[in-house]
Length: 167
Image (cartoon, rainbow, N blue to C red; front, side, top):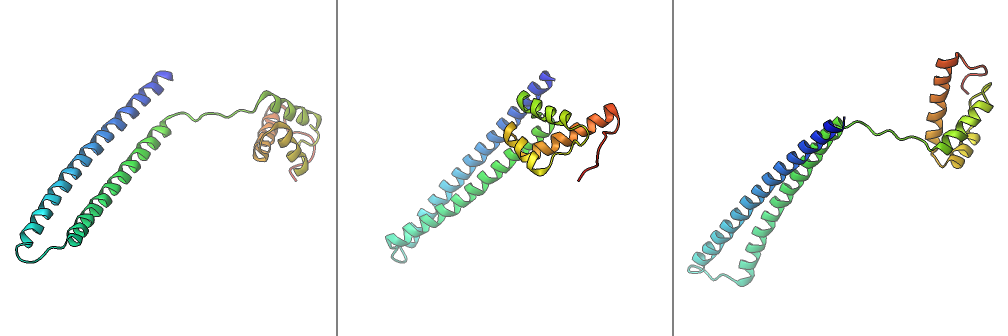
């Protein structure tokens, strides 16, 4: 199992490295295009200056517009990269076994003691559930699941529990 996890981690890291290398290549292309367009804009403004006056504010505004356009393309590229990383991460997460979250020994002992003391009616009231959750330092949902699972396991092992059905 550990070898499989290590292999998955290696494949995941390799996939991320390939994606990062591709992203880096795209950023380099984008920078090259930006520099090319900036040079073209400078040349165009220079040519137009022989026909009409070019104000510094106009030149500055056109440069800023060009820069904003390329910044937007970069942000879109970055967002695509982030989405691809998230997608790859999700693919590899699905292959990982889910981690189990167990209750502490103290919590399990408290709940088991309550259950055994109330075998005739193993359904705590809402107030009792809240008190057990506080005492065990767990959520009410965990208490609900624990009792549901415990009753089912008890019924499978010992037959139907005596007492009433669910309220």
